[in-house]
Length: 77
Image (cartoon, rainbow, N blue to C red; front, side, top):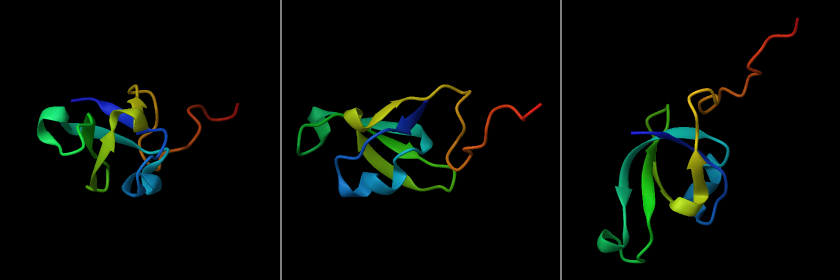
């Protein structure tokens, strides 16, 4: 599917993942969850899968580092 970066936490399960990038492996909507929210199931590099509401994530391009890979894109000259 596509990659997203967790940019904010509105729910307890989201807090440890703020700033990390993962792959969207599923989606849910108002038709199949009790609170009527839209969201994504996101899998991280370590295999952890967490559900996030749409307002907790933003699209992450392929150029952005994956979770834990916060190194600079270029080495100093």
